[in-house]
Length: 298
Image (cartoon, rainbow, N blue to C red; front, side, top):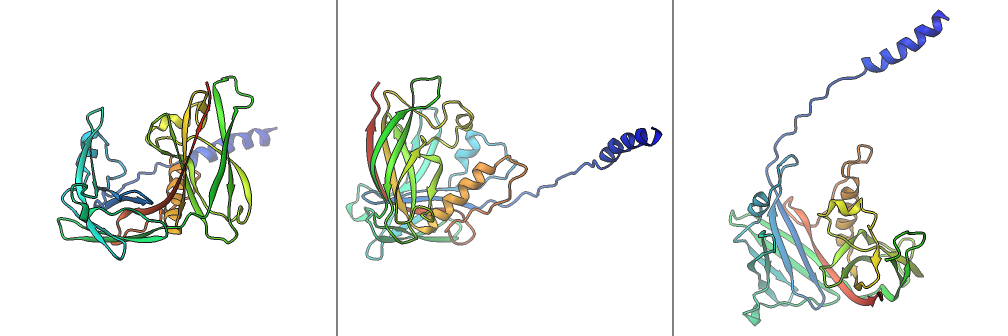
């Protein structure tokens, strides 16, 4: 019996003796340029430039506003025409001021509209003379959403909740990449929790896919809500389905994986794969967009 008691005594002592305090010293890193640039068919380019913030920075509206990069020379070309973008600002309902670059609509010669199956070159010259470049493609429309329909959410006590389905056709041949968004009741288009997909499993098939509602990634409480991913009776929905190139897919696939792993101590580290030169963060993304509406009656 004495040996048994000694065994139970030494086991907890062993575990407690293995504890040690780890003091992490995280060095402050110099800020980097962050690029969020897009162009889609029948649309004009949109470029948002900012400076990165350190991991332990206290993020306030003032700091976010101060992170925007001003007075950059931003040009976009398609091989035949190159235009210089103008800087604009927008103030939302909360008073937050937002800055972005797009075409100068007052000058028809400086307007560039996205076209299918076309490559675009982005060049950014900052006031400190540093230069950043990127290339993206608006691919042809290959993958299509043939139809949409809805059903009441099964086994759900809230009878107002609905789920959305789509029928998709993937042509034969690997290398088709897509990303989806949903716009509900006139609100902005938001991507799904997982929004970018390749065709390794679906190549050459026609298949059904449940489409969860997209959401604002800044709304961290939305993911934990019981209402997450559902639509509702009375919703007017526009499904935005886009063909994308591999660089755009790689960026959003790795970005979403990093986002979903945030705060998980057991997740593997992931490098977000952007396509901006000179060590900048972010990506220049082209979208071949299709829009499909559906209304769920009250």
